[in-house]
Amino acid sequence: VMAQYVCSKGFNMIETSLGNWGWCREDGSMEIPQCRDDAEYENMEFKLENGGALSDNIGRVLGRSIDVKGDPKTEWMSGCDDDFNDNAAGAICRSLGYRGGVKIDAPKKLKTVSNVFGWTNVQCLYDDTLITSESCHADEYGEGALCIKNEQIAVKCFNQEWSVDVSVAASNNGKKMFCKVEVVKEDASMNLKDSGLDVKFYRWDSNGENVEEYDSEVKYTNKKGFKISVTGEKPDCYGCTVSMGEKTEFAANSETCGDAMKMG
Image (cartoon, rainbow, N blue to C red; front, top):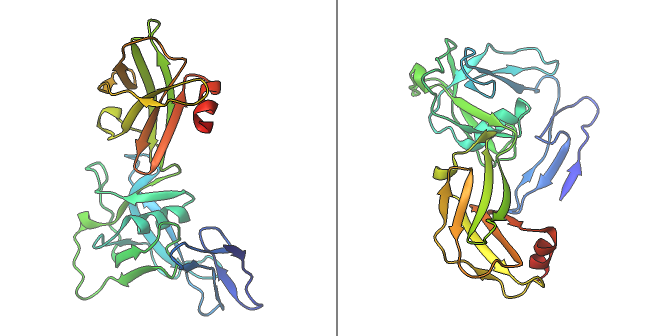
């Protein structure tokens, strides 16, 4: 369930990741915009610092508080990575215009910044928010907090968490089948050999019946995909599935066979 919100006259909106829209989650929780008067209004803006050594979507996080006019209320400050989680990294990245993000252990090329620590224990319960959400939490960095420079928060932002492009083919003699796969995770191509993909090959009748999984060993090829060796005649319809977690992509040797498989 989703709804649009409007603040009463004299109040200003702190938006959600979807602007003035709010919604209910399956667990019964809600994400809704907040309305504040000028005196109470406080928002956050962020930037990533990487010294030009890495792509723009990777960096140490600097943040500062801004007022209703967008003017800074604090200096740029870094965050201590104690208890920092991926949901909070995603919230920061969304405020920068990305669809999501993850926390990272900063690579050696990513130098520390000179800015003082401003907050610690930055966490969010859900991976669909901005950092100003009431489901996010942070503590002011102060007495009892202890972080050194190389423990400054660092993130990798992305627009596509992961996508899979799959196609299938067979050798002319029908003795081998190939499942060509291209996986993009967090806007970067993955090494298929170490990706942990679950790849399976199938055959079925042209009417979508008698689906059979090949029990041949699936082997990685150096041509961006996987293959199996098969016996018997080349089937009219065949295909492969590629799974990562709860997501599965399917490819058939023809559109007709693919439609038959889905309807069978």
